[in-house]
Length: 466
Ligand SMILES: Nc1ncnc2c1ncn2[C@@H]1O[C@H](COP(=O)(O)OP(=O)(O)OP(=O)(O)O)[C@@H](O)[C@H]1O
Image (cartoon, rainbow, N blue to C red; front, side):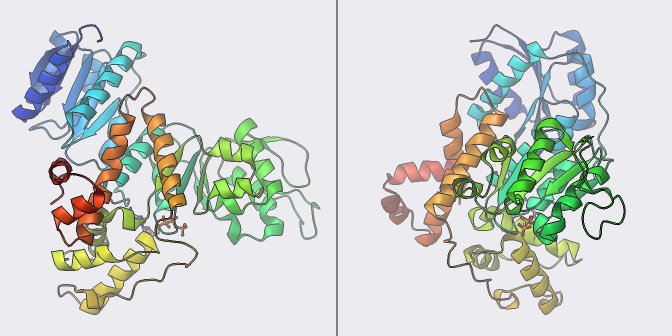
């Protein structure tokens, strides 16, 4: 147990204050509570606070606005933000404004405990205050309420401000480019260029020239010196889409940029310095590419330091409803409803083209329905999947688990609950599909799962699955 520290809980819901107080007192800490930011700030100045747990939604001043004031008043204590809805903007704003971490309501006490323990440890090591610029938030277009997307938001929030390169993986249409754009937008390179580029779309012979530039006479047609992508993106961020398609020679040059921050224009030996953050995306399995020798292992390890994996849409069915509403609203059909029956039918579809297919399908349906309530016949037929790509092979499952584990370890290096966290992340999908499969018959679902009915009931309740 850690030595006694004082924790300030600021939340206008007495039950949350009570539960957190009980939990932290159980850990041997002292707890003071406040129901508004103003009251909390007064207490923060009166006590020597090691950690603040701060709700975002508060009666007068909200938690994000109050966060810099709490950091100031507590001499940079760790602040854990509680959000009612773990959206990307709040998560990024919280982390960017100096929060150590955040919890999404409703949260489990064991999650809160783990987060608080880490935050209290950080509190002791926290350095002097840094200037906290309020963040200019633009409307995110990255929508999702599933646990998988919440994990993606958390990862974006945690890596955005660093200069780490990030590998974004996922099937086509899962939103990899949107994730890259969100990282660039929320990074401290936000005012510099963000250039997404798909090497596969470039002429293979000219690809190095496109990336690194060339000098006059380097090859036929090189009539003058030309800057490449890395020069144009100086100070900013580059997304290399479909990184798996890069030729081995180009991979070696990219590795030099990543490791030494250097490159040379084609036809030139003079090294140039690249101040560019590199994000990469792929929908292919780089493990296989490494095994077959078409992708450099050193580049693979360099890129997979931080990995964000976007699961296919069929593995995050909770996102279908908010995505539909988002796309309808963007088309100014916000009033066009999606009822439960339609939603259930949409959730049955395989969505091989993922969110891109859903977006196109919703646009199509909205135009066909012309403002009336949508039904399934308004939607185009599902896109066929590639025969070579089973809906969920053992191999892709293995990859998802690997990516999740790597990302969680990166976010929580001191974790002591990895196994429980893994179950929380993966079990709801398993149970939902089983219930759909058995038409809601819990006894049958429990039998097929090989677990006791009571265990199934408890898990469903815990995950709030109806
Ligand atoms: N979470 C999301 N919220 C809102 N829109 C999304 C989301 N995910 C994807 N989209 C939309 O779906 C489409 C495909 O997304 P994106 O281009 O980012 O996918 P991708 O994984 O990069 O695809 P590919 O591998 O084919 O390049 C885009 O129109 C994007 O705006």
